[in-house]
Every structure is written in structure tokens, then in C-alpha cells.
Image (cartoon, rainbow, N blue to C red; front, top):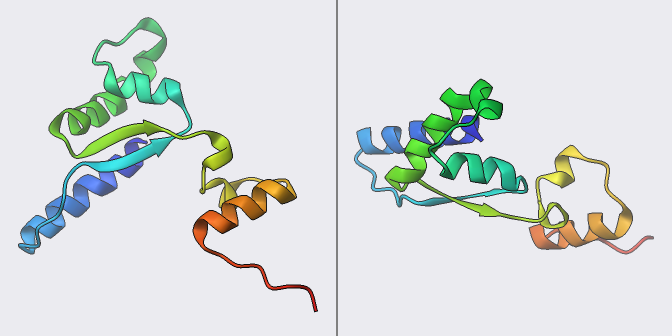
Length: 106
């Protein structure tokens, strides 16, 4: 999550330097409810000290309105098409959400 927010921050600054207006409040979808909660919650606990700096950066961008954090079920996570082996039905469902049409077998 920190990498994506860093890239978004860089893009906003780049567009600003080029005087190109950009809409803030980029929706960032995650299937990890724990990551969303940690990013939204500014209070750190003993168990999250190892990620404190990254979470602080993400939280700052959340508070500034650059990103919004939303939960997405892993069965609807489009990135899984590229990162995980999926069963046939789920694979076809996610392909459909991307707008990919399967050609009939010849």
C-alpha cells in the first residue's frame, strides 16, 4: 500500500509541476481489512511498530484527501488475475470485469 501511495504522491507532484489539474481522492482498494484499519487509525500498537513509518505516510495522504481506502473481497480483486492461480469460474468472472471476451473454441 505504501508503494502505491508513494507513486500517487509522485504523480500528483509531477502533474502539478506541469500545471495539469488532477482530481484528488484516488480510490485505493484493498482486500486486507487490517491494512485499511491500520492506515486509517493514527494510533500504533506494539504489534504494528515495524510498519509505523509506512503507515504514517499512508495515513498522512489519507488525511490529506489524496486517497480513499475501501475494502474489496478477494473474489472481486482484479489484480488476482495476474498474481494468483485461479479456478476456471473465478478466472472467467474476473476477465469479464476487465472487459475481456473469450473467443469460442475452434
